[in-house]
Length: 216
Image 1 (cartoon, one colour):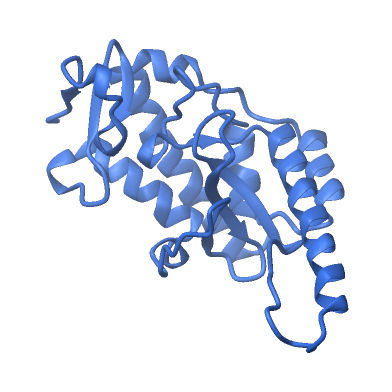
Image 2: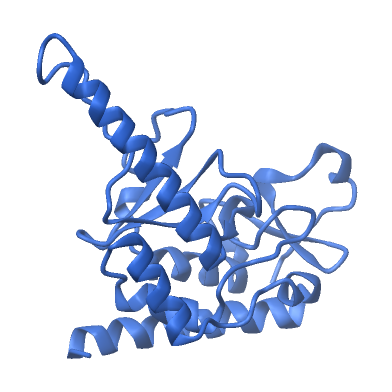
């Protein structure tokens, strides 16, 4: 690896250690739902299947934890999103690329070339997390060409450039900062229900009376 790759890998490792420690100490149910790290051949299989260059920071994260089994369908990431398993990453990438190829066929048959061209997915987009463990209505992908996260949604709602400003490192750092110093959290607030991390933006109405905000 180059010096830059080493730095990125170290930043991901250090940030993940902060998140992992917090979950172990304060949200044991969520910590128990984390998948173990992936082997090198498993990561290589994702790269082969997607035909994309997997960045070192994402490989580093997958070596530490290769997905999130979640609690009641909810994951540990901001908004209770779930870190996708490697099998889910490969399957969703394939699904989206098939949809893109279909769209390109439609584009080629349109009367006026260049009109209404739609990009559903790119080879360089690697899905990272989804709305829930099995819910793929929305989520975040890592653009391996730019290094920035982007948002996908089945409903194509406008999200502006909120997620595009994040790298995988800065996204995880915000989670770690929000867990360790919740008073400074801006995008979402951490809380607990029966030993599980539940972010304030996505509390189930039936569980509102059980949710205890984490004060640090």
